[in-house]
Length: 101
Image 1 (cartoon, rainbow, N blue to C red):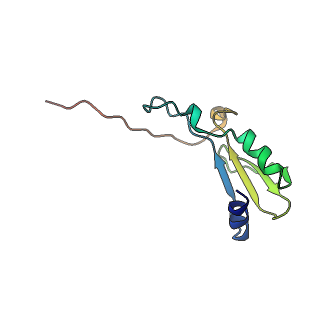
Image 2 (image 1 turned 30 degrees about the horizontal axis):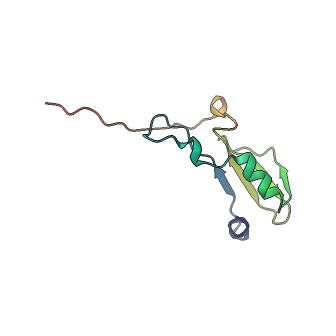
């Protein structure tokens, strides 16, 4: 993770982490397949100094500045912090339609 933060910030890129998206029935329970971004942020904060920013892009990410690099990290947490009421993104899913005779 430290290398990924350094890689992105050395190239003036914002790094954004996202929890698994709740997409409905996808044939597997993905709740056990994600790391809470609250936990990830605590891990990052054990190594880096983060300061919350009021910066918004219109999407669901919440941003923090990394003092040591000057770069930003975004956090999109649809499971631990429901953002749907403020989200301006369209989610498109596909489902198989029955065969026509």
